[in-house]
Length: 286
Image 1 (cartoon, one colour):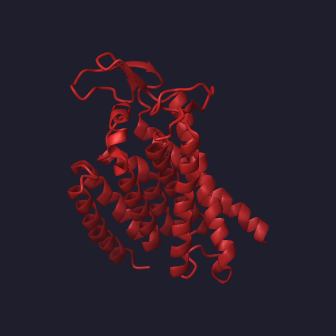
Image 2 (tube, rainbow, N blue to C red):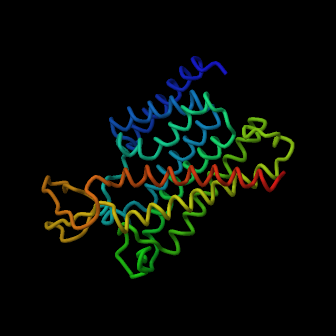
């Protein structure tokens, strides 16, 4: 693989996509920088299948953030940031994937692809859970205690949110399966002659990775993520500072553990689960 040419192609493609997203208000200016950096690494070092999965996540999550946006507008005040992703959000969602892409030329092991699938499944599943779960007419339950909480509360899970989590992970798995077929067996290990086994393993890795990562995200949100209280709005929020510039009071969690860090850590869990699923399925297939 000519990595110099691939990186150049990655710069061109990621720049085109990032600036298109900027025009559609899906990215901030700092988010464009982050998207170009991560996109270049993932496209250039991981390959076009990796890059296509990254684009799939970005397109699907951007579309969902606009679905019934008026119904979710009031809840957005609870979240640390809005629908326009900045540099931190881009890094939180794609940072683990970029690290895996950097490792790919040196290790070249098929498990890296499944780890990447797991991390993309996690960020996609978590986005689907957030964007659709808050629309559940029934109140969410805190993952640690099961007590009812307000929609949008960190650590809250709902039936619709869990269904969206599984669907979000499966969506990445299905796209990965289709791309795997077009790439004539990206996963390696001689699976190109066993498409059903490969497809099933891709789905298992993505669904389990997405579900595990999303649940870890909720667990961290309910326990040690930094949560603040806004005196002006009389409600809890992930924001350290309100939009009007007034600082909020930390009520629980570790101050450094922002929502971006929670997303990054949960995506790493999804990557581990995706790689483990690959290893276990290989053992079963022997």
